[in-house]
Length: 249
Ligand code: PEP
Image (cartoon, rainbow, N blue to C red; front, top):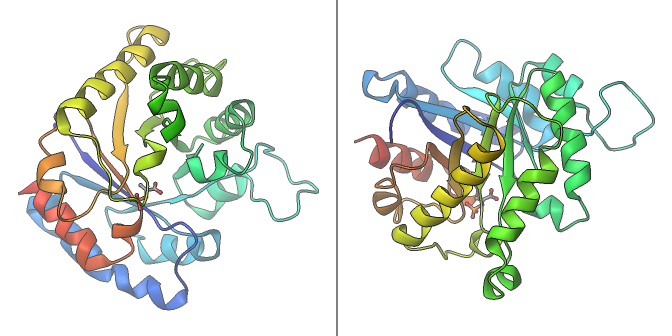
């Protein structure tokens, strides 16, 4: 892995005010010379976004939201948050297209609208793609990935603010991870799909799905990826630090 290595923590629907202080040890680690190459981004639930932005001020860490509405202006959308609100708060990233939202009815078209709104607001997008078990078993993985990328990025011209998070749905929270050889093959296919669509642009791809402090020694060998999107293991600072340390050292 070259350049900055991304460690994106997706806290999902976990965490309360008490958990904000738990990231202090991660902040301390990020200040050490050896870890200048690690780009750590926390995506807490909306209720903690402001606290995380304040906590990470004047550090190398950044903060992202876990989703956004497609509408950039204020409006009657009960329970929703716009990319404009996220930007104004001081967060710099937003996860869009996570499989846990896709499985709740989020379509490729809706994801596309959300990505446009985030880009308009100059946010970095962590764009999640990945096949489910049924699609994998039926050898539809590449077709699905192509569709998710094609429709999700319709009318998007530049991918410099997009991080592609390859997250096989069957791998999220299950402990199951592809063998390195298969994962590398899949990442290269994704890279080709993206770079065919966006000529002369470089795709930034990270991997997500059951990354933990046990399998990281293996996963860090993969040069074709730029880092990791980490769910469960990122909510425990000790485990998260262990992952970062093992990757960097
Ligand atoms: C995720 O939800 O983005 C994720 C990668 O989860 P986990 O690490 O728990 O599999």
